[in-house]
Length: 496
Ligand SMILES: Cc1ncc(COP(=O)(O)O)c(C=O)c1O
Image (tube, rainbow, N blue to C red; front, side):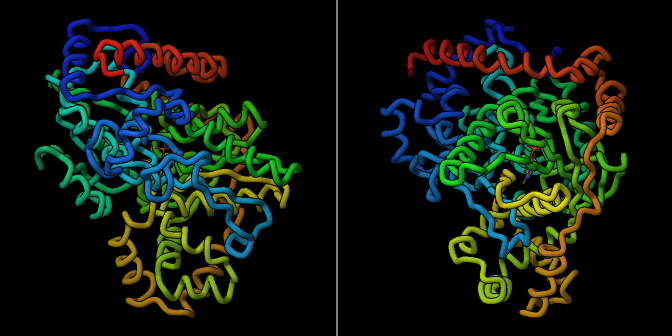
């Protein structure tokens, strides 16, 4: 599959040499994927130097923080990813919903910087991206373009964000501070589910050979970095919890799919624990559930297409969550009246309430889908459902203000807090849960044909090979091969 980020050998030697020189000058050392999966493998001298580096600075050493093992201050490394087990008082179900916290990632406070690195690093070390001549283009509906722009800036090259104009103000403000030129923020028509418009903009921009597009929806580096790094982090969380609760089963992994990169962790967990993989989407745009379309506000999870890197035939359930619920709960989890209600009436423990700022809209979506999964599958206290809080509430203050105006008549109070909790959290239903049969999987898989073969020119053979699980297992061999390339590249810059 050409242009899908699968090369393991050096493609262009001249580009490679120029990149080595740029990285040497800028003193950039690339972490290996093995180090990002298990940061205890990062050399002590790098960790010592990292201590003095601001986690929000465009500093090359911050690449060594692109993993799940940062503490709340994001300066120190921790032995276990930061997480919260949501209590029944909050979820209304006995199953243990375990959430890894993505706002511990550096620079963008969201897990998508990992995906950006997973797409970029293989291209850098195989001579496919020349930071001295190319611009890096990052098509995204959410945080991926922020991660990409951050990494581009570290490399001293132009990073261009391509995203729908309707995304949250906070995202645009962050981008305005980080891009080299305001023209490097390209606003495409529409909102969250207008992914096709992003592809169209990329098609036009790709005519300029100086533009290199890192397409997260079809770069297998995105799938692979989550398979290994997110998969291992979640596996370690589960094993730690099982240490004190030996009967615990890893019954489901839940992830709302934008590019479907994060879902790659599901393949890792399923291979070890037989975990069911739950793909989540917005009810207002039920692509997997109903071949549907529509607008929604669960920012980061796009849709109206099936990403090429989604291993559909290994997916077990589809759950749709309404943006009316994620918007309303975003307010409940932030407002003083909401927190007071959860503390006094629901008796949600203080340490859990203190972590609610780690839940942005798609993180809440993941929690709601986990609750619906627990109900649909009758899961109990011996069942763990793992998921991720992809980004925190800080990105959505402007969205909460809109929700208070639109859904709550301009103000939020204790009664509205009770109603919101009852309707959207405790009332989470199984109405939009589909346990996939072979025919369902095939239908969803086939839907991808229209994007990838008809629109994007992927060959039928490259498209259909993804039905076979042997294809995905074969992919897993790529990471060790890329790690060898990364070590060789670092050797050439003589920095590591
Ligand atoms: C906030 C947020 N949630 C969820 C996702 C979906 O993750 P993935 O693209 O790995 O499926 C994204 C992706 O950009 C995101 O930014």
